[in-house]
Amino acid sequence: MTASGTLLKEINEKLSASFPDIVSWRRYMHQHPELSFKEEKTALYIKEKLESFGLKVKTNIGGHGLIGILEGAQPGKTIALRADFDALPINDEKDVPYKSQTSGVMHACGHDGHTAALLGTAKALSEFREQLKGKVIFIFQPAEETPPGGAKFMVEEGVLDGVDYVFGAHLDSKTPVGKVTTGEGFQMAAVDKFKITIQGKGGHGARPHEAIDSIVIASEIVSSLQKIVSRQVDPLKSAVVTIGVFQAGSAFNVIADKAVLEGTVRTFDEDVRKQVEEQIRRIAKGIADTSGAAAAVDYLNGYPALYNHPKETQTVRNVLIEEFSEENVEEMVPSMGAEDFSYFLLEKPGTYFRAGSKNEDEATRYPHHHPRFDIDERALLNICRSFVKIVAHYLF
Image (tube, rainbow, N blue to C red; front, top):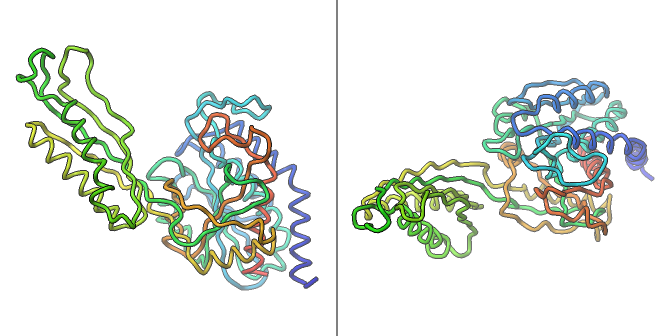
């Protein structure tokens, strides 16, 4: 075994020894979740752990964000590793000892696991700083679930200054524990949100000619929006336009004066993203004007598409094959879901990968954002091993 191989073996032994702690940290955070932009106690908990590992800590970055800094004894590159730590407004329906103690709030997407795994990575690597050729920045990011998100603000406050590469991982309830997935190029979509308010003229249901029916107008807009993707967007490029909210009316015999539509747009290509927004605005105004109504469009550009840099993705794929074997490293399937890790990848080269978290137990097979979401906690150790292997490739 080579010197670096021996060192990696020692680090992984430290990780295995810390596994009970990693699980304990995850379960503590699962019991005490906090929503986006409100993660004060979680940030303090992370800070205390990082300081106990002997790391330099900087807090209040872009809100409740914080970083732990591990300085190697020798010069070299700077690697950033990121985890998110906000929860969701979902009631925890699991019957487990570590069930959320906060009504209506739970870690239903695995962010508690991401944070625990990064803490475990930081603890293990902190014991090998003499062999480290460079620096590791452990980024703990708040507010991934709620646009404008926490990544944007952390980047704007310089969290990536001096960083050479950035990497992130996500638990995956669709993939068996023990397997990891990687993929280059666009892997997650840009996410935009829009709200269209149609102002018509109310009236009696028996006298529609005296009113301007906002429901009929809104219905026409909904129907026309469905044609943007099928008739306006290049069929070789991906896009989704979904209406999730249609609110109007208060009585069966009253013509509603106002209707409200809310929806989301998902795209990979930035030109397509702009094109869809323009079409939504044009369609809403055109149909409303034709009907004698008014349409106001409130459009929010959310997270950009997540683009995994090819060179760094291939590097990560190769080192993960070394760690887990080729049969356990699979191709990532692109998703129209969104992830604000994309902001980090707009600034620095790197990649975002997933670690399988399901097993034969039905409890681990619920999808993310489900009120019974849970994981096979061995996946946390696999994220740790992945991060350590990546750091070893660049800094040992």
